[in-house]
Length: 402
Ligand code: DI6
Ligand code: FE
Image (tube, rainbow, N blue to C red; front, side, top):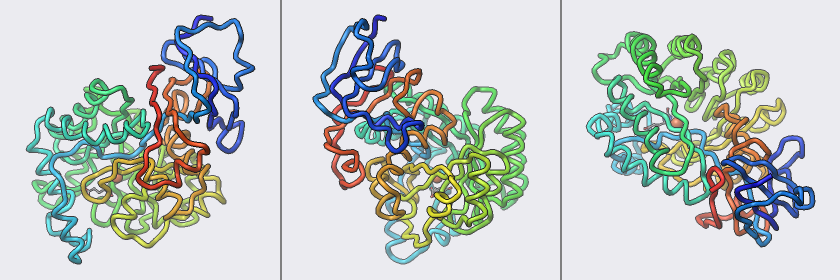
């Protein structure tokens, strides 16, 4: 077989499930053809007859799957540094939200931004993620809250994947907050999300999944369920901002709809963790938001382990509660704040993040058949990816074989 590229003399953290742990191969090689991995494993098992256009000596460096940020709000207008100052002076997130600040102030700035302005500001954030080996990013809408602006956000998100070598998946988060013009009528707005916005955005091919914010300050479980029902009827995947500030049993709700993931989960209980495990719904933990809000209630990591609920980590990059564009720091926070192990942290931004996007067939592990999205690291052991703070050991990032 004639290959495009071979990386050799590498140490691999394949994350292949059947190998257990990080799926380590000490003397490893990866071969790519047409953007996909055709071989990843011990060098001595690479067929000797295979030739490649280019052979890259990795000199013992570690290769992991390209990192995946499976929960972001990367596209938005304006910023919320002023609100951060208010919070430091004692105001709570809920107080700011109820007083018309918070999400709604970003909605105003996003409605005022053109598509190219949204792309330009998002690219600056995306480039930070990319610089640390990120090859796939999920991006949510939810700062438009009207059809026109939600569509503009999602188009901007799609455009990012033509501006940079990166996979983008898009999620419609129309049920993020109640827009000011809704006059307080959440049910009428949810009708609009289900009957007008969702079908129109699907028609334009802008949505890969549907998300909602199920919370006292946002939408009830019943309203969330209506959005999910409409999404299911259109054959869309489901995700949920669940149990972030209180336990409305969002985890069970998401599991009941066989959601790909339920995210945040600080207030999720044992039953919720169990329901998620049974449904195959991934727990996406967002330590950046936990940290920024100075939350003290920890997500039930022990219950997730006990029931076998899969755990992913993501930045939740957003202007209000998690202005974070580093998956390396996210891993460190996952370990330090949530006590995840190194293996759990690395799996959480690769294999489990791919699972949370429903894209495990295409990415998330170093296995034949998947896209050849790699991160090559100047490290001696994988723990360094989690241990260091504010240090970037990325040597090279490969997207679809290049
Ligand atoms: N949960 C969050 O942490 C963000 N959205 C959500 O549903 C906050 C979004 C913001 O404050 O702008
Ligand atoms: Fe979020």
